[in-house]
Image (cartoon, rainbow, N blue to C red):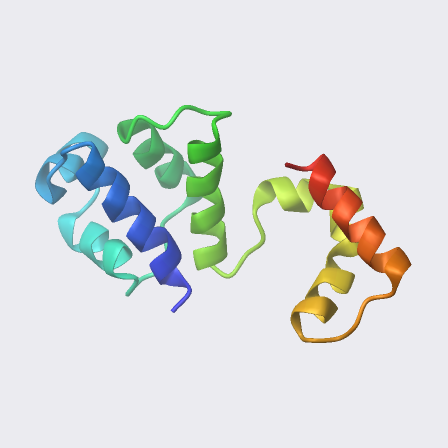
Length: 123
């Protein structure tokens, strides 16, 4: 289940910060039932605004890999591409090649080189 990606990360970060479910909910204003459903991957992640508020509560700083990974996990769990990916026109142009490759289709040398170059530029 795709929603597990975000839920697992959320729970792991919350426990790492030694925040109980109830304490985290008090700080963020989130309903405990909703938080439990997100962590178990039963419900899709909440709004982007709430995700960013939860990230701040978890001590994730904007611009860090951990913050970006959290937002990416939330987007993927909603069945969306991450915002950074959508904003990168060069990467978006190459995604069809990437998805074909993931489906087991062969890439030409030129396509593979172009894809690798884009990935390197975005690391």
